[in-house]
Length: 139
Image (cartoon, rainbow, N blue to C red):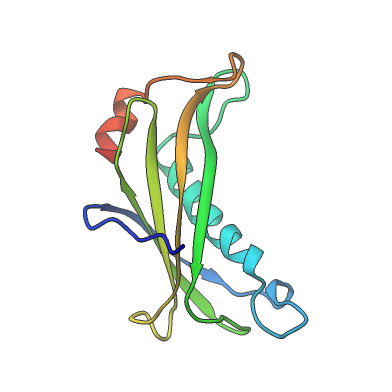
């Protein structure tokens, strides 16, 4: 089953991520697990920039599921342009979506993926409503 990026989404962040030699597997291309790392790097960079850094004694984001559609293989060397979108804010959650393309071919999407992010009270171990400042950014 292939998941699709929603038509209505909001661009919130983009950055360049290098492909590292160690990202490759025995077949000479980027290992499928590393695509999730690329999305995580960009998602966390955005979260930290907007002031959403997790506080182990308080509240913050949790990823409750994620997916990736592998469209074209990636290999070393190279830089990737990873673009992040948000969509579908709910009471305590929102969705993130990413596209991954080589910087030298930004029009060719090599992977697309995303995650459901839930705002949580870490001590209570349960979801809580999105803070107003975050709702304003993802809405």
